[in-house]
Each structure stands twice: as C-alpha cells, then as structure tokens.
Amino acid sequence: MRNYFEDLDAIHLTSEMDNQLRAQVDVAWPKEVLCLEEHGLKNARNILDIGTGNAYFLLRLAKRYPEKMFTGIEVSEPLIRVAEELIKENQLPNVRLVKDRCPTDRVNADFDLITARLSLYLMPNREDVISWSYGLLSKGSRMIITDLMDFGVHTFPERKGWYKLFRAYAKRCGEQGADRNIGRILPHILLKNGFKNIKLDIKQWYSSIEMESETFYSFFKSIAETNHKAMPEYFSKEDLAEFISVLDEIKRDPTLVAINPITVVSGMK
Image 1: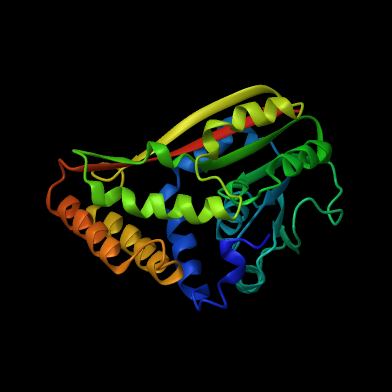
Image 2: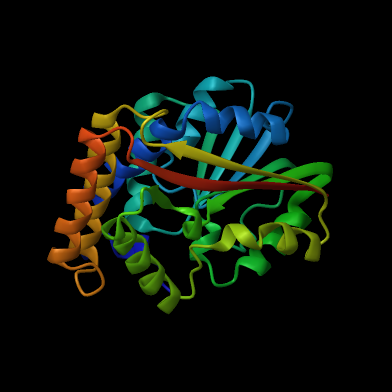
C-alpha cells in the first residue's frame, strides 16, 4: 500500500514537504536527541534508521556523531532524491541510503541501534517491521521508536478549530492502514516481538514555552496549508481558515497554549 509520502511528486508537494520535515527536526532538537541518547544512542556505533524521509534528521545525527555509521531506509522516491542530494552536498562519509520498503533483505548487518522516527505509524505491516528489526540487532542492543499520539494534542482553553487538522489526518491515514495514535500501543508491540527492558517517555512541546510564537505560527501554518492542498476532501478551505484563526489567537495570547505530545519507546534485544 502506498503512503502519503510516496505521492509527493503527483501532488506537487515534494519541496514543501522537504521544508516541513527539516522544520520538524529543528523544532524538536535538541530535546529529542538528548532523549535518544538516554535510550541508547550515545553508545551505539552502527545505526539503522527506518523511514528516514529526506534524511535531514540523519544528517544532523551524522554531524553530531562523526564516529558513528548511519544507514537510512526510505521507500519514497521523491524523498530519496532529496536525501541523496543532501548527503552529497554535506559530504557525509558515515551515511548511506537504501531505497526500499521494510522489511528488506538489503540490510543484514548486526546493528547496535535501530531507530524509527515518525514512520511506523504509516506502515500497516508495522509488527512485521519490528520483528524484522529485532533480527537485525546484536544482543543487548536497542530499538527506539519515536511516534505519534494525536489524541494527546490539545489546547488550553479548548479551541475546536485546532482539532480539525488532526482529525483529518487520522481519517485519511486510517483509510491507508496508518495509525496516528500508535504511541499508545508501542510498548505492547515491542514486548510482543521479544523486546525487554522497555523504556517509555512522553515528550511534549508547549507553544508558549519551547517555541517562539513566530516559529510555532509559521510551522503549523505551513503544515495546515500543505495538508489542505494534499487532502482538501478531508481538510477543507473552511477548516484551514478556522485552524489559522486559532494560530492567530495563540500568537496574540500566550495564555492560550497548544500542546503536542510525542511518544519515545525503546526495547532491548
């Protein structure tokens, strides 16, 4: 089954999605990378990244840890093209890319860390991917999954227009076998597939504290506009206008807070 990101060329959104994925990484850094270090990144040397997208996250990791080797797997042809150019421009000898769908037999090394960042929710075969990942890890190594839990996205005080984007996401993704609330079941899936010593973190980003108002506004406005273009039948022009009106209010009034949670779960082989 094709996912949202495989159709970027057809809907003329490859460049916009590249920009959003970069912003997504920048917004979460460095809180995210420090969390990954606590889950095993710091001591790992040979790392596999599942669903590496445009490889911008891998780029930042490779620059931070030049002594580590990173392999990124991505199925989206548009994103692989962007990723290859990014790696070439930055001359990163410790990064290699594999264009394929997981599971794949094109990687077979004993990795001492596997990461899956905001990618498993798109995969209907996610349990097969986790089982395959378990087989690629050396004993005592970990898999770290960073993924979504949209039912935790909310505003205080509540603004109904804020939720329309995430409901639209959930409806479209659900029709494609994706799960934007996968964070709730990740510990169970890891345990079911043989992992032990499970570690769980819920990281939250607050609009009025951890992101400057202009950054928050432009980031979510871009996401909303892109998704209106990509799925107008789920997120209408009126929905977009209502969402942006909430952004305007948040920008004016820091006591109106939007909270975006991300689940980070890891397990040891």
